Each structure stands twice: as structure tokens, then as C-alpha cells.
Length: 112
Length: 148
Image 1 (cartoon, rainbow over the protein chains, first blue to last red):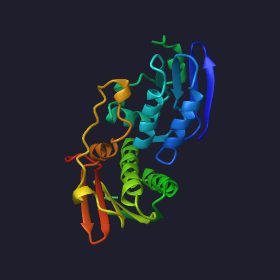
Image 2 (image 1 turned 180 degrees about the vertical axis):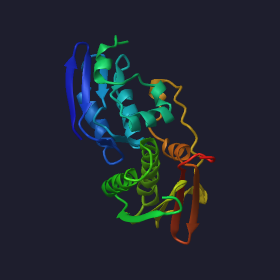
Image 3 (image 1 turned 90 degrees about the vertical axis):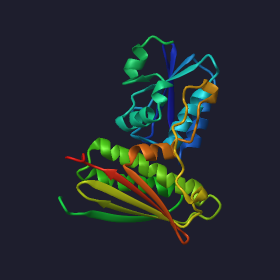
């Protein structure tokens, strides 16, 4: 799994460079997210625009990535492709995370 | 393709990597048919959850055995049959697949337990049979409205 992390303004942007977050990669994704987000800005934006497919293991790993952040930090999601958005909507996880259509939309939004 | 049937089979060993390849390959073939993108997305999600269950549970205590998939597409519906020789489902029946409660504190959010819920949401009908040492899971996806 490949993650790229940059800091832009008051947010850390973590980009997923993989087209699937599935059962085969979920545990590694969670660990890689832990390393990338050990410290940094309060707001983390996960850029999912390259991810065409996610399963429930991948969804669970994103939830875990959010839960392992310190309490004052938040995880927002950007660039959800239709299938990824469908999984979040069906499981009602779209009510737990802030979803943005694109990374630019997420960066433009006032954090908090 | 009225009245006609498009069928194909696939078999693979129940490892996470072979499962990933099989899910992607089956989905690619179905996307080349008359399924809409949204239908194909739903099928891929349900198929992945069903196959992952076999990999993670049916063969949890043994060497990964074979998973056999049969896809049968007609105009009105798609049937996918998944067979394995692993352990049966608990109590030989389909889990209820209730929606996970996400209206909870962040620390209590569920990180799993979505699989059967997604399968039930995305299929029109599901059926499980244990025949001898073989699990048969049948997923049906209606592709057109009743009056369509």
C-alpha cells in the first residue's frame, strides 16, 4: 500500500495511491495510516480519488484510522468515487465522516 | 439478449490475493455486459463480501480450499453461486446482517460487521444450502423493474 502525505495550510493531506482498499490490504492500510498521522495538524484529509473499490474490511480500516487519531483531531474524506460513496452511504458511515467531492472542495472548506 | 443466458465459471484458492483477483476479474466481465454502472458496482460489493466471508471464516481453521463461482446472467436477473468446502455458516443459516449502529461515540464506532448487511442490501434474494460438505451461497440481483 502506498500513501503520500503532505501538509497544506492547516490540514494534513494523505493520498491513497491504490485502486482498491480491500481485505487483502486493510490491516496494512490501518498501520500505514497510524505511521502517517502519528503527529500533525488537527485536520487530516484522506484523498480517496484513486480508489475505485472498497469493501467492508477497507471501510473498517478507515474507521480505525479515524479512531486511532488523538481526540482533538479529525479525519475528513475527499474525492470518493461512486462505488466508495455507495459503501459509505449504505452503511451510514456518510453520517460519521465529512465527505467532500474533491480534494479542492475539502481544502476550501473551513475546518471544524 | 432476451431469453439468452450468459454464463461463466471461475475457481480459485481461498487466499486474500486470489480472492481479490477473482473479484476484479468477475466484475470486469460483468461490466462488459448490459449491467448499468451502478448495478455492477452493487454486484461487485456484494460478491466481494460473500467471497471474503469464505476466505476469512469458512477456511479459517484449515488450508485455503477452492472457491467456485458460477455466474448466470439473463435479461431480468443475475445469479451468482458461490461454492466452497469449508466449515458451514453458524447454525447452518444466513446471518441476520443487521445494520451496525453508527450513532455512537467515536471510540465505539464499529470497524466490522458490515458484510452480511451489505450483501442483504444489495441483493434481491439470497439463499444458503449446506449439501454434504459443500456450502452453496446463491445471490440474485434483479436487473429490471417488475413491470420493466
